[in-house]
Amino acid sequence: MRKVIAALAALVLLAPLVGLVSVGLLMNPATVSCAAPAGGFQVGEVPEELTATTRNGETITLGRAELTHAATIIETGSGIEGVGRDGILIALMAALTESRMRMLANTSAYPESGDYPNEGNGSDNDSLGLFQMRPQAGWGTVAELMDPDYQAAAFYGGPGGPNEGSPRGLLDIPGWEQMGKGEAAQAVEVSAYPERYDNYEPVAEQILTTLTSTGAGGPVTADPVPVLAAGPVVESSRVVFPLPEGTWVATSPFGPRTHPITGEEESFHTGADFSAPDGTPILAAADGTVTVSEFSGGYGGLVVIEHQIDGGKVATAYAHSWEDGIHVQAGDQVRAGQHIADVGSSGMSTGPHLHFEVRQGGTDGEYIDPAKWLNDHDAADLPEADVPPAGSEDCDTGAGASGDPVPVEGDPDELVDDPTSCTDPDRC
Image (cartoon, rainbow, N blue to C red; front, side, top):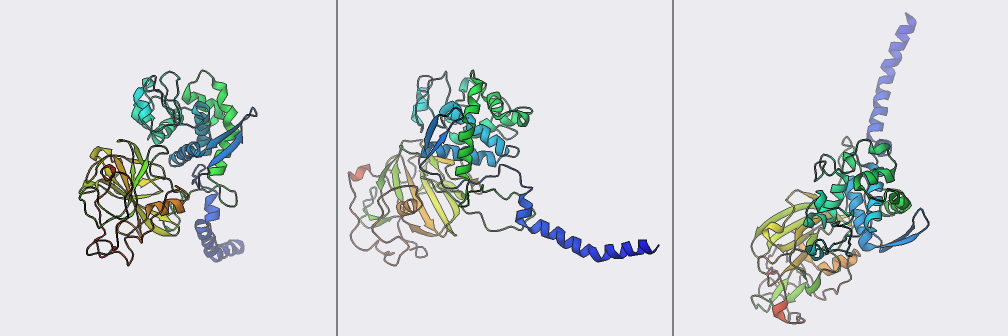
């Protein structure tokens, strides 16, 4: 009887300690991370190039465009339950094997595929894109398959995949987790050369390690555990140019100038204009949340995204899409490089182009020079405005910006511009 009483007393005394240990385990991120599912990767800065060696000893070099596609594959897989690290590696191996991580058009089968951003022209049957998916096999339309985000989602498949299991994506393959990585890639691709995929596993490993490493060299894993106290919004670690490489021409910079439509001599251009073919994909400049998605006024089609970058809030705005060229809604979470809209010429516009703004402080923040912002984040190498921003004390809110307008190079009739002027006292 004494032993029973002693045991009960010990239990009463130790219960609070057990509770504290339980709380410690719950609140200690290091402990919780042990249970975090593999594959929750966060992509860091994309390097200009990466050199790696295949299993058979071939050395290959991937440029920024190919590595940006790899980042898309990693980020897409990270957002899909059940993919994990192995699934991401399998997808990278498949894209490396099929296209060397390039978006390939196929103008012999689909002439219109050449109108979409691409890094070359393939000729394998009617195959398109990173994973060489075939419209005739039911993978998607030409427009869909020339979109890297769509291709990545289609490869992974699963309940949320765009093809609903036919054709089968990786998650639709029974027992893929028990297969070799090359075997699993072959199960999705159904290639005539199934042995090729394993050759690229070392390259896929190096890509994943390089794109998801911190300064200490370890992988950065997302925190998917819902029981932890909510912290600040995770900062975007990557900034990209808002249009695909090789598709645009800078036409009108940030600053005071003569308006190309109204002829007003003292207007302030609150963004930067980039001429591009109608329908060119517009890309989110960084990870963030869509705050505006609308079609009205001088902007025409407008998307605004808020980001946490460099410890503060900033918003980017993308204007002049056609009404059917807006692909996101307010509240959507987007990734850097995600296809959010298409270039158009709606609103006050003289031709197809992107009017791109950067607003310090958020959606209703002060306009700053987009060229400088992109340059500062290694996303571009553009001439920067030599005038104070619209939010500075030198901005004239009455009769326009002070001083003579910056002369416009070229034919003013060819300029494409947004009518926004610096007239809001709260922002100027």
